[in-house]
Amino acid sequence: MVMFLFLVVALAVVVAAVTLAVVGGGEGDGPLPEAAPERLQDPLPPDRPVNRADIDSLRFPLAARGYRMADVDDALSRLGAELAERDARIADLESALAGAQMGSGGRVPMEKPDQEDQQ
Image (cartoon, rainbow, N blue to C red; front, side, top):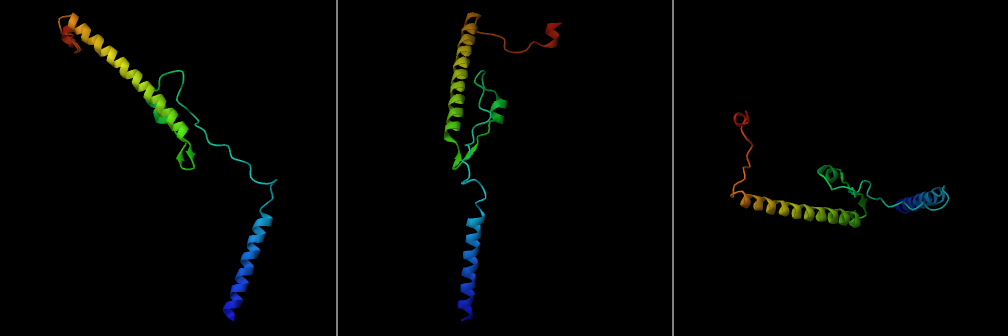
């Protein structure tokens, strides 16, 4: 009998707490407003090549399951394009260097001259 009375009192307390939470919790003008989705604050600069500091400062906003895929995909596409551009430029410079080496007898001095040679 004591256990039954305890359960009834506990049930009444739970019902009262839920009722107060539902009735007393609605002090605003209706439901909560929709939160604006987080966006990438500092995207990679569009007007110049990306440098190391840009990559170090790049922070992606968190989404429900990690990061926003569109932001990450955009950044990776941009980095991939710039790496391909730099690889092409390096290949052009290497071929120009190879051509210059062949034109000057096969040897281009790549070392810095000594201090004694300059005086």
